[in-house]
Image (cartoon, rainbow, N blue to C red; front, side):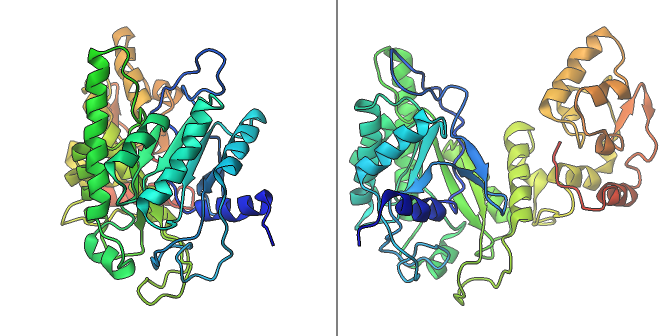
Length: 410
């Protein structure tokens, strides 16, 4: 019996929720003339599943048929699930109709693999091309590049998509071979390297020539599944650091492994490691926006992130000799290292010093999490009570002040 679009949407939107690389930042595609949509400053509308994952309203797979049998994947060929596949026109119609109803602000499109990488990617590109050229759709489009895709296919994808991504899936080649023997990291790094070079080339050309079109203006990203293999946080974050510096990725996404099968090659987890996923994102944030070196966050001495406290607080507790920081004298970089003080608050503190001494009340109004910051800063030349001279006591006070542990970075 022929499956209707509503049923396909139910199956393929559910299958897509395991891919977390759905953020829409990094693109400034503008609406021109009487086109439809605009990705400037906005992106895909997000909602959240019951387990806390970020899910776009139109975040779908083209198909959940797949020739591969990766142990961690719900769409693997040996899994007994209902299969479905959209046509190109069905995805285009859904995108346009959802957009006009204000349900979405863009499209995140991935897919199982029909025959091979190019065959599958060509169908994803046809959707993006039709949206851009026939419907003048200027909303955000994120396309998945299937590992092993040719440069010709990626060249065309970059003309229509805001962001492209190639998923590493598992942090190490050794573990990938164990649970997904048909895959390897070579087929991931080859298109990733090509995209890095092509995006750089396009940016240089656009500086020289005004009429050069954009190529993947939102850059590229990747995703790693966390907890399905034995890599420590040290290896995962070091890999992320390399990807940011060498491949110039806009984002590395971490997806806590969700136990979906009884495969003996996988760990016997009862629940997804969401707290670990959250800590990895916090560490990633510190590396990209707070000036931390990865070696300051994780090292051979501290190879795993502390699940009870955020990485910035853990760093402060391990380095009590660096605190308290006098917020009326210290440079911006040191203020930024105070737990509970974010980038905007640190900037406001530095600016406010031009007009007088900054008080604890001022720091509260600037948005700092004073319940943590108060242990690590001096105000008006005086240390506050319970300063970080006793890290164990401070740690206990922060963890148990609400009885649920400490989760927020700011």
